[in-house]
Length: 265
Image 1 (tube, rainbow, N blue to C red):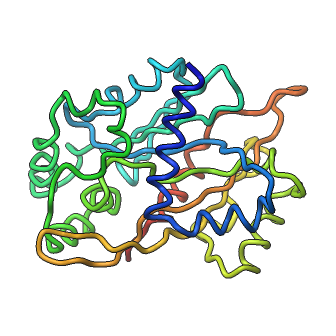
Image 2 (cartoon, rainbow, N blue to C red):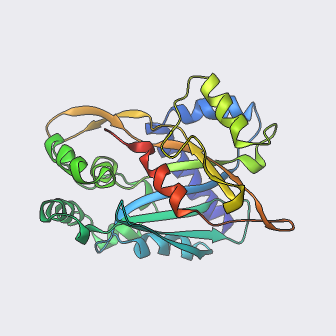
C-alpha cells in the first residue's frame, strides 16, 4: 500500500515541477543533497458532482489514509478536510472545495460548464490528481472568475494537480526555526507570501507556516496563451502537543492566508 502511495506522490511531484520549476531550486538550497520530507500536499476542487471533496478523498482512503480535521473558510467560501496515513513518513493530504452556491449565478454557470466535461469514470482513474483541466476556458472567462474568486479562476486554468507541496521543517537538516528557512529563501531571491505576516501561526497553535509566492506559468486558454500564477511551495514547522507527539492538524486562520500564495491580482 505504501508503495502505491509513493508512486502516486512521485507522479504528482513530477507534474508539479512542470509548472513550479522553482521547487527544484528550493530543494537545492534547503536540502543541500539531503532528501526533503514533505509535510503535506494540497488539492483544490469544486463542491459539485462528480468532483466533490469526498470523491477525491476516496482515492486516499483506499490507500490507507484516515480522515483528520474539518475546516471552514468563510471569507473565501471554502471547506476542507485533511487526511493522514499511519506511516508518518508519508505526507498528509489537504483537500479543499469551493462552495459554489455562495457565488453569483454567472460563476456557478461557468463552473458547472467546466465540471460537466468531467465524467465520474475520470474521477476514479489513478492519474486524476494530475490530469489537469478537462475543459478549455477563454482568458475573458478566467478574468471574470478572478473578479469573484481567485480559487475558481485558478481551478479554471490548472484543474486537477497538486496546488502545493510542503517542506517539513521538523525533518530538515540544519534548520531549527522557520525564520531560518525563510531567511535562506529570501537570501536566494525568493519572494514570500506576506499576507498575515511571513509566518502564519505560532507555537501556541502548534503550527507555523510560510510559503513562496506562486511561480508564473504559461496557460493555453481557448483564445490566447497567458502567463499567470501557478503553484507554490510551503514550509511547515510543527510543535509537540504532548511529549514526543507533534500536532498533525491545520490552523484555518493560517491556511486562509496560505491560499493567497496564488493570488493573480
